View 1 (cartoon, rainbow, N blue to C red):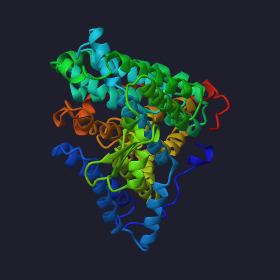
View 2: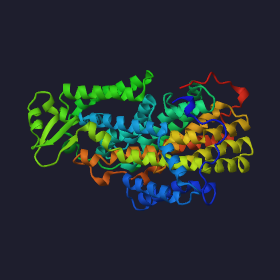
View 3: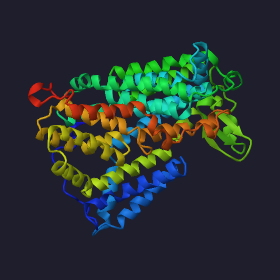
View 4: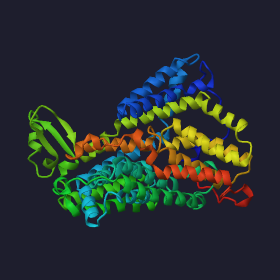
Length: 512
């Protein structure tokens, strides 16, 4: 991300006019939120493709209220869908999905179950440990979305086997993702919050640690207490997981360490996960954890003479199968790991397009102007308004980096009005966008984890639909997210950690 990708200065003039004024530009997103609440919350239908339809309907209805040429409305949608922030989320999901499924093919879940049983880690303690390890992974690789995908694919089924409550366990995974997204120096949200508030990344990370650690300690204690209260009976581990790789599956901890180590060295997340993926494939083949066909297979019909010939070759034949029926397809962990996120990718692109409609139509500007004129009248109320403003934007934009970019100019303008230091502004901006992006049921982080979760019944014979955690039920249990928001509300009300511009000067702002 470069500095030119970030907004600067006051909000742009409305480029799309609506009957009913600027507020009507929020209609597509408002309809989608209502649709999501009804579908997921009231009806209990956790279908990402259904949410895609809801967003499409919202965009179509919004078009009917556009004044003048509808082409400008369509152009704005495409403009939003091609933003880099949306592409970043897509890449994280695709790569993380392939990586998680390939490790899973090598028996990593069996290894986790074996290790948990050997260490006597029961259902009561498992959610708390999941939060800690998810936080460490997310901090290391800098992507909460990738962490949500990987841990839901790998750690979630292990916890369910041990008897941990699925909803609480999913909340622990999302909480760990929040921690890493907020604190990791290589996280997109960390970079955007620092650059948009004219602060250096290193100083921002150091200054926000005191807030993050308070929320983390409270969240960890909450998972210990809730884990004991909500723990169930373990499944028959011997019958369900004993036939797998057992302790040998833990060798894929090396694959994960490769990803973390490469990311910490400053390499791009694509490169980091790609190296981890390569290591996982090599380990699967070298140790006999999974055949090549478990990771990639071309299933052709018996009518294909070329396929029948290739099937007899030593190396190529290992990834070619002759299907007994008339079906022909591609399979394996690389295929399923990427394919499972296609509905979510479409949904996110549409939502970012709808957010661009609200921006171009003046909806965000109207909210910001009202808050500036009627709410933010003192330093305390100004900082509280920053928290409220980020919450409003995150309720409408599912990608937390996109939400952060949308609200960043408002945070900067409001902070400069009251002479609030850039570090403080960046911390308020990042904490709330990181937290709330994993709390709302339609948030990108929640949907990313759920997209990985709904594939589990096809990957494990013992995993049933009843074990899925509905996104609409998990929001109260994302403890770290809620505590992080609460910490900054308390900080705003009490002045804890407040710094003015003269108190500390930022180092040269990193250009990334």
